[in-house]
Image 1: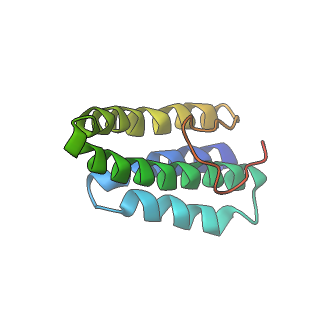
Image 2 (image 1 turned 120 degrees about the horizontal axis):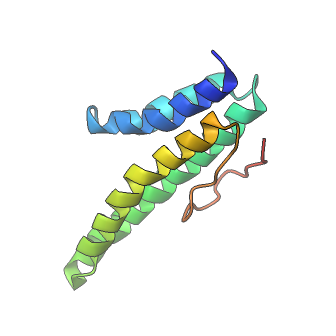
Length: 114
């Protein structure tokens, strides 16, 4: 499989959570771990996706906590929108051979541009 296609599928694999809970976290993680040594591009995209998955999990926990002050429902809605949009944008960028760091991602893993 071509590098660009692999990275594209890695971004799309996040949507697996729609059908199987946590699959959208585990699948891109496994894809990244299997390809990171062979492809700098896959390594960069995997790190970007992993940063986003961890960040969005933290944001979801904070949003649930904020429900008690009536702000959390709005942040959860916003998070759901960007959770859907960011992987699509990442997928498009990957198909063009570019890396795109998801906005709002906390950089747990440093990313070097491919």
